[in-house]
Length: 265
Image (cartoon, rainbow, N blue to C red; front, side, top):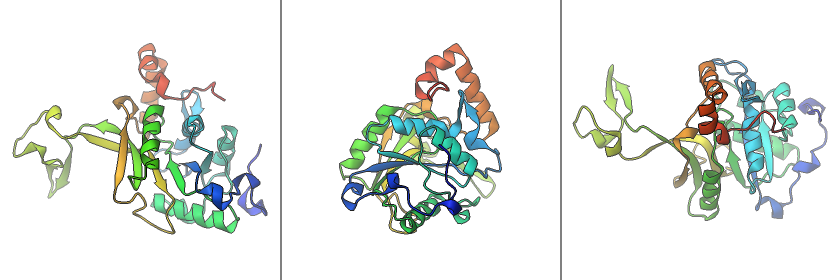
């Protein structure tokens, strides 16, 4: 099935029409995948374990029982067609203003809202954000996060992975520990620090009204994955390293259950 270009689309896709009653009880997964990466051209369709990178997030989202639809947000017709091949819906292409180098999540969400409204597409209130650059995920953590999100006790819930808390930033050309756990010492054991986590594997949140840089809110819950899910594909060497690990017996045993396979279509 081929994607219909925005300029050619005159009527909203019926699959995307939602009654106001149903939209409040649905959750869509959004996979943002622009085509203009400067540091790693074509990153979101580069091959990992026999699949384009964006396909990993699409197939993972489709495996979650609480996700009713998987939407690919992209500025590329090529990416859109690849996304459809793996089961994503692409009702329109992202605008230029939401595809620039400095565009953030709030820009993409605003574009999604405006374009959907102009096409009479009723968006659900609840969303799950799945970046293609984090292809290793644990379903149990997402089920836990969904439960916390639906409890109403949090403004949003992030799926996180453990990170070494001994991180330093630079001020006045010198490095300084970010955490206060050092307490004047030069060195400290990781086990003596408060737990630290990396976000960006996935976020559950409610669709903001208009442009909102603070769309996750003030009370952000979390569900933790294991360290095996920490891979973040920003550069070619990141992808090469993970592909190498998955090519080895030890790597497949350690990471194979966390990643989609090329024969999964």
